[in-house]
Image 1 (cartoon, rainbow, N blue to C red):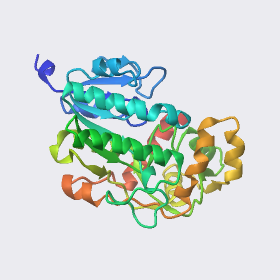
Image 2 (cartoon, rainbow, N blue to C red):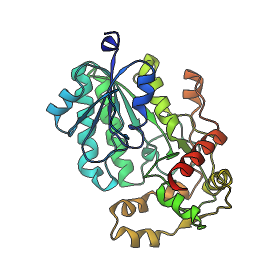
Image 3 (cartoon, rainbow, N blue to C red):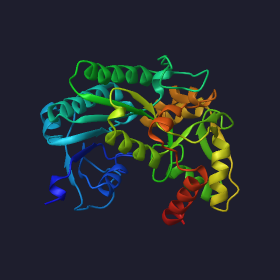
Image 4 (cartoon, rainbow, N blue to C red):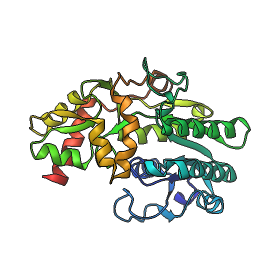
Length: 317
């Protein structure tokens, strides 16, 4: 009975971050419901610890049912890149609608695409200057969310992370293909210049930060950059991971021409081409505001790399 009275937290999306959040919420004593569109997610084996529903959050009637009774809704949805023009804004509207009808706070996960090609570390005050189609869509989605907050329709807070690294990330530079390559004695691959400093946010820290925002009203109505370890090059991070696995590993950049050729048959790779700018200049996140407000530090890089190496050994070796 005590558990039944616990606040309900609803997680939208069962992908790279949405799959990590439920266990953190359960550990805090919340009731949890996860919502995904269907098909195979990243949420592991079935469990009786939380409720799971399937449906399309772009359907506003379904969105209202899926979030009914929620105290907090976490929008971790991220359609495949090639579906963003058709699905990104409709699913975002669905999350807003559901949270508003439930009277819940909405904590929305976002990226850094709206800032475009940076000339300095990106903070929450950086101007929007998108240089990609996906960046333009992210500006629209941000305005949609904050506009709903300003009108008093729903209490919104937005969390922004840089590119993910961590365990079990199929849409990251550090994906299964990367680990299969380095274990076979081949170099890892990244888009752009592997020597360029680049902020990578540890995926577990993203889920931890969303939980913090869901629990603190200070987060409401604002944008927050999720704490991320100091930027270093993709090559340096790759060599860290290699050493943890007892390997000598290098990282090479994939030319745009090669990406375009692969994109002829792979829609995800085709959409990567316009994002290579992130690895052509220093791409660094300023997360100082989140750290100081919530006294939150990212997982130390050596600990994160140790966790990744343990996962690789359990899944590939």
